[in-house]
Length: 396
Image 1 (cartoon, rainbow, N blue to C red):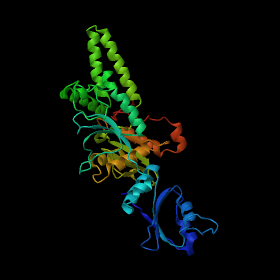
Image 2 (cartoon, one colour; image 1 turned 60 degrees about the vertical axis):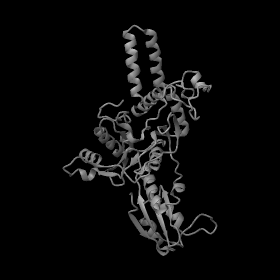
Image 3 (cartoon, one colour; image 1 turned 120 degrees about the horizontal axis):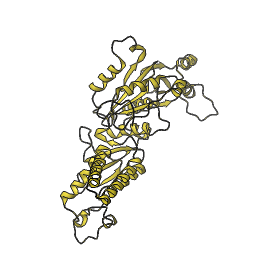
Image 4 (cartoon, rainbow, N blue to C red; image 1 turned 30 degrees about the vertical axis):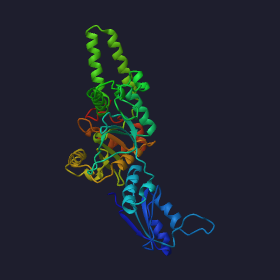
């Protein structure tokens, strides 16, 4: 847990010394009150000194602004170097201090994901904000893919993807009644129509598995099969079929163009987020495993200058020996991740794991984050994280 590691007692008679001791930096802060029965005030701010001067300074009798000068006894706080660290620290502390109301304090709303509900005999793919989990905290009941920036974004991507498959979109209970008229999608040959027994259960299951494979591979499974079919048709001089398959590939590209970069199958959502640290020339490394954010590693490049091990070696050891945050709430951690990733502007950098972790690119990103603002903007810039996250000198 990101702790509130600094403390100051508050005495109104020595207010000037108290405020002078506070850093004028971003922080999360707990204001402790005299009465043990009174709930302390927990805040986050971009300037700790200025915010506490408003809350604990001499009260203006003409102002209705909240003032705790007469009832505060001290403050516990944590200086934060990035918006990501501040949100994570505020979340962790609020959940521990105010378990009954931290969700309202942070306005947490589970992010939108796509779900293929495998508990249903005839699964469909749809957007949802509800993620069922096992007792061990792992997703259950189907395949989840996300998180998306909004429900609208998830629905839009789902519409494009479902145009590539013949999986049902209706929400009716499937009775396999031959007298049932079917829906518009079955009439347009865009659904296998299990509602009126237009396919066997085995045929429908195969189509669902094709959809699941598409989501698990980011579209690579479908692209590979379509390209093989198209090349085979061309070799057999069946140019009409090759043309149809080429159009399907174009349709696949259109679907992938509306896909945000972050969404993945939740079990495969593995990444490393790099942020500036509070200490001079330091980087905080936040690992994401299966959508859950682990406790950070702080890399101090000042200290490492005299160490026999390199920063890259320490980073490798930390990532390869770390484990997932088992007790973390998956939905809440996805909210934290999505909130940061889709923010604009977004501070820090993220790297996804593919066949291997891109350690060299992470080290170059550390140099960019630690560079002075003018040097960072003037120098050559490595592009954003590649889709496969592999060890490459050039990004895709």
